[in-house]
Image (cartoon, rainbow, N blue to C red; front, side):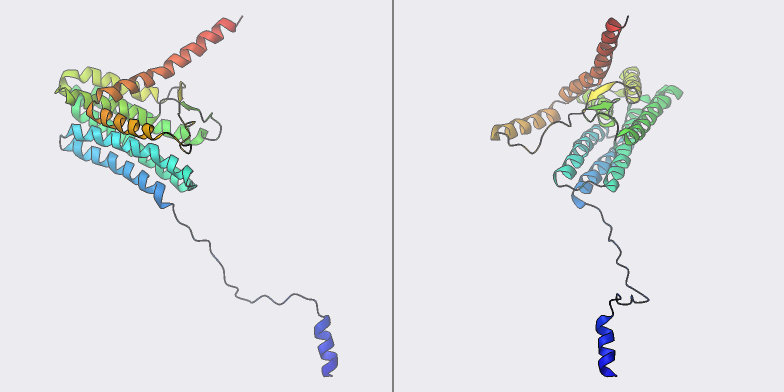
Length: 262
């Protein structure tokens, strides 16, 4: 009986029985810490700008928005360099941009120059804020179909640089906001509307940060950062040119189509 039983066990090719309560291995979820640190820093810059504007320190508020813009430009590139891209990071970045480049510039420019303009003042600030929200929503929905080399509409960090840069330049020349409130309102409306247009702006995403550069290039980059924070009129002028470039490109395309059409 024992020999026949052993032969039956050897000829049995059925798989072993599965335990009734098998352990379930759940995938651990987390976030990439390095790009999230840059995004959090950009978010803090926008929050700090709002706090400073409420306290009347508009110079510090404008600088905080520019600092947030630098950190926001680094988080995505750092994520790509270290292969730490994720859906969470993309959503977190959009929310941080809404605070730092949508709400913060609108409140800063309103508190600095638009408070005495009544309904027109807060309407101009709200149009800018709504433009930033619509710009980010359109970017998130079209990210898979649009050409990576261009932005559709003025990017929210560049729009924030227009508004905050104007405040920074005027404060640097000791010009009060009430004296230039109409110019401030025009710049705010221009930046808000430019974010929702179909004008194409260069994204500068083709710049390769992985390639080697001469050591002198690093020194030049450091000098440029010093000049930017020492003379705010320089970055403000550059962002004004960039904001107008999209309309120039669209006008050139329209004229080209008009010449070729019968």
